Image (tube, rainbow, N blue to C red; front, side, top):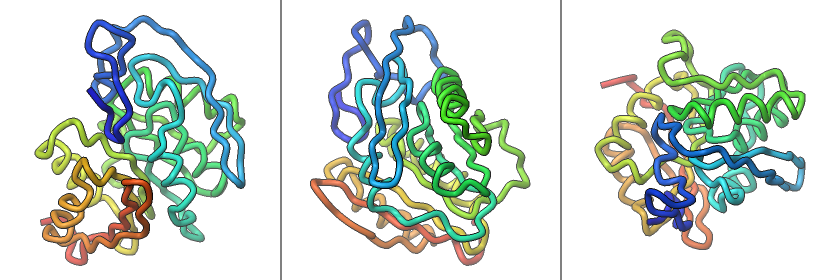
Amino acid sequence: MEDSNGDALAQPGGDATDHYWSDSQDLRSRPRQLDLLLPDLVLRLTADRGVFAADRIDRGTRYLLQEGPPVPEGASEVLDLGCGYGPIALALAVRSPDARVWAVDVNPRARELCRANATTAGLDNVVAAAPDDVPDDIRFDACWSNPPIRIGKAALHDLLEHWLDRLSPEGSAHLVVQRHLGADSLARWLDDQGWTTTRRASRKGYRLLDVAARENGPR
């Protein structure tokens, strides 16, 4: 089995992260320290079993943080959808200290790790939250995500539709998806649904997609 960016995952019963997109906590904890090294920041993060990319910083995540756009000037509400243990959320929080970064994940262990990593880094502008705990009236100036492709097309579409329709009118989302796991077909679907989608960059099989808010709001 592979993760959403092609990295190997153990099968159930092994040293698995195979259900990182779920709320299961049945794997014994085995924390490890990982370093997120980017040109403008260095973060020491704690990862654990049962959370996406527990063995190393995911290549797609790193690519998104290196080649994606900066946080918009004046942004107040920013979303990391599927935050895991927090590499994207924490990097955004460092880069935009005046913004509140919502780190959203269904996995309780992921949220706990993200919250602890933010505390260790001295970042008080990260809010790790379950999806249902984000207030309905929040609208996001921008969203970054390494989305969980392996949950299946229908579930992925539902997930993206829910959160992309919470972008502010001028907001945008920035996604990293591996080409052979459907990046181009996902871009076409987003376009067809009214989210104007452009390919920002492509390298080593990854696509970075910029997604604009729907002009007429939710359908």
